Structures are given as C-alpha cells and as structure tokens.
Image 1 (cartoon, helix red, strand yellow):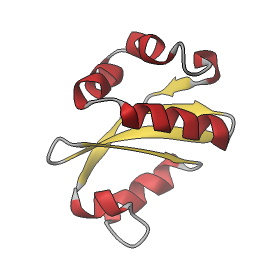
Image 2 (spheres, helix red, strand yellow; image 1 turned 120 degrees about the vertical axis):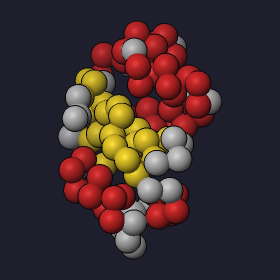
Image 3 (cartoon, one colour; image 1 turned 45 degrees about the vertical axis):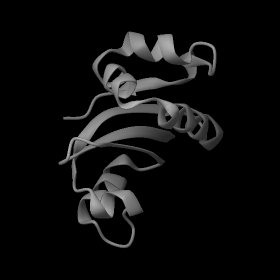
Image 4 (tube, one colour; image 1 turned 90 degrees about the horizontal axis):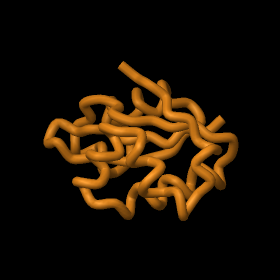
Length: 104
C-alpha cells in the first residue's frame, strides 16, 4: 500500500510526498533530521492535511506529480473537498484507484 500525502507547515506552505508508512514518514519530517525531505528540514511541519492510498508506486507517483503541479489555491480546495479530487484528476488518473484517508 502506498500513501500520497499533503503536509501543512508552520508558515502555511504545503508539502506533497509519497510513502509506504505514513506514521514513520510523518515522524521523519517532524524530526527535521537526515531522513526528512530537504523542504521540511527548513519548513517545520505542522500536520497531515490530506492523504490518499493506492496499490502501487506507479499510481502513487502519478498522483503526487499531478498534485505538485497544482497551485496553492487548488491544493487548498483539494484538501477541503473530495469533489475537487474528482474534478482535477478525472481526465488524468483512474480516480477509483485512490481512497481518501483521514488523519487527526
């Protein structure tokens, strides 16, 4: 199982990534150590604001690519409303292959 996630940083910026273990990856980002992404080493992570799961790395990488191409306003819409997921990606990916996950 792969996860595609969006993190909110303390400066209100957003970071998108993929992983096979969401809890471990979040802890790595929060630590700001060697295993954190270069971006999250300089932008302190606040929390996960959106997450989707899928079956394989190819699917995960494809969704990550398309999310990273969105502007901040579009990403905020995606975070707030699952309908935007369908709207933004219906012509790019098989949206049925992705499940939205909730994190507190």
